[in-house]
Amino acid sequence: DIQMTQSPSSLSASVGDRVTITCRPSQSISNYLNWYQQKPGKAPKLLIYAASSLQSGVPSRFSGSGSGTDFTLTINSLQPEDFATYYCQQSFDPVFTFGPGTKVDI
Amino acid sequence: QVQLQESGPGLVKPSQTLSLTCTVSGGSISGGGYYWSWIRQHPGKGLEWIGYIYYSGSTYYIPSLQSRVTMSVDTSKNQFSLRLSSLTAADTAVYYCARSVVPAAGPYYFDFWGQGTLVTVSS
Image (cartoon, rainbow over all chains, first blue to last red; front, side):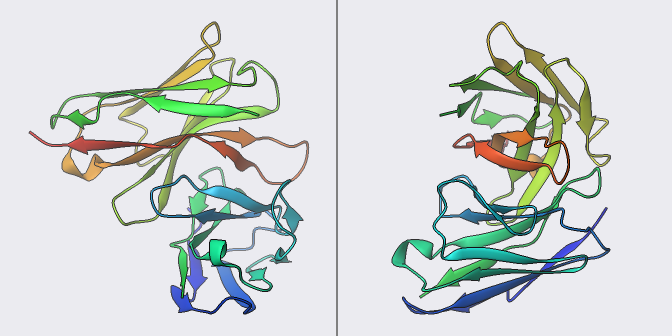
């Protein structure tokens, strides 16, 4: 299975900040990388697919980049509703795997 | 708007079999281009994908659970189901059903999720 790592595991930020989260798979996965946001007690929500494609309805302050073994999720001008846990997920390997998550709090 | 809703028992005894159903509304489960997945999240932990089923009945299960997992689909009811046998406390988790988009090229991704159902394995 492809192991996913995320950094940092948690971060504290303020409204208006720019936040960057990194995801690194244990092997190259081309652009087969998706990002999700999860709030407490809720199901994950798709933000970005194929590394950089914004899911319909997701605010444009969210963006994704990268390929191979190095990916980034950026949130420009953090809003109060963005405080959540963010997960990356690969679908390059037949066994889909998620990263351990990055918690963004105040 | 596609919606998914899990249903099933919240408490199951060790060694028993868990049965969960996901009802899909707002779209047909028989439409091509989608696989239907189960994903679980242990309390306070990350996400683990269990596997998926296509409307035709073809399946893929992760190797670590393959011996205990069975998925099925009922297109007449627009539902798909998960059975997980030989339960232990380690199977206690929130179980989600989700739609997996299968594009012509590029990665599969989960675009619609159920709200999740907590399953506790305890005597």
